[in-house]
Length: 154
Image (cartoon, rainbow, N blue to C red; front, side, top):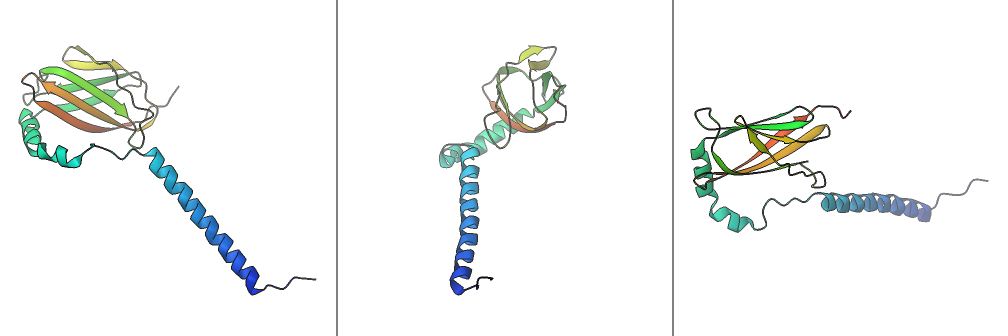
C-alpha cells in the first residue's frame, strides 16, 4: 500500500532540498575565499598617494619587456626606447598562477648578451610574470605580464 503524501512530507522535502543548496553554497564560498589571496597591496590609500608620480616616472623610461619560454628556460628581453638593453641596477621576478600562490617561483636571472635568462619549469596553462626592475637612476619599473604556456609536461 502506498503512503500518502502529506503536507509534512512536502515541507521536509522542501527544507532538505534548500538545506543542501545552502550548504553547498557555503562550502563553495569558503573554498573560494580560502584559495584566492585577492590582495594586491596592503593599504590601497597609501599606495594611491604616489601612484601618479611613480607611473609617470616608469612611463618616461619607455621600456618594453618581452618574455620567451621554451619549456626549460625563461628569457626576458628588457629594451629601452631605442631597442637597446635597458640599463638595470636590480631585477626581481615572480612567476605564478593568477588564482593562487602555491606555484609561485622566483627564479634567479643571469644577464648575458643583452638578455636575462633563468632555468624554469612551468606546467601548462596561464602564468603571471610579476617583474620589478630598478633603473640605474633609481626609477622603479613594475610590470605584470600574462603568459600562456602551451608546452606539455614530458
